[in-house]
Image (cartoon, rainbow, N blue to C red; front, side, top):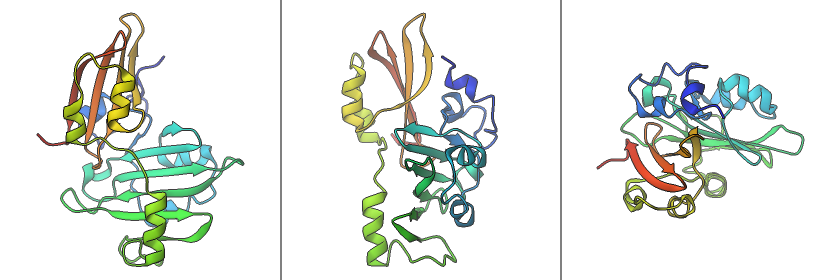
Length: 219
C-alpha cells in the first residue's frame, strides 16, 4: 500500500508548510484548491472523475461520499471542508461544507442538495438563501451538515493500548489511513478537527495505540 506521505509528493500541497503535521500525514482529502461559491456551484451534477480533477485530489472516500480538506491561504479565507455525495449514476447530488472566513472567525456554511436545488449559502454576495437566517436553510443545514471531527476533549481520552475500534467509538467515526508499514504492522490514522488546520494522527502497532500527536486542537 502506498503511504500517505508518498501521496503528498504527487500533487500540489504547497499551501501546507513543509513542517506542518498535515503535510507529513497528508491524506487523499488534502487539497490547496480555493473554495468559492461559484466554483462549488459549477460542480453540481459533476462526475466523481470531474470532481477529482477540479479539486486536485481524490478525496477521502466513504461509501458514496468524498470529503476534501482545503488549506488554501493556509486557513485564512477560501479554505475549509467540503463534502460531495454521489448518486447511483455517479454524479454529485449533494455538496456541503464550511468555508473559512479567516483563521479566527467562524466559517460560512454552503449547502447544495439536488432535492432542494436552490441550496443555501452564508458566503458574502450570495444569491442563494442564507443558511443561518432562513428557517428553510437552517433546517437543511442541520440535516445535511452532519460530519465527524475530533476535538481536544476526545483527543485526551485516547490512551496507549487502546484498539482501533475503541478510538473510533470515542471519536465517532473511522479515521483516514495516512500511512501503513506492513513489516512492523504499523498503521497511522488521521482525524480532522473542526478547523482546516486542526488534526490528530494516531499510530497503531500490532492493533494497539502506541502514540498520538495533534495540531490545532489546543492544549
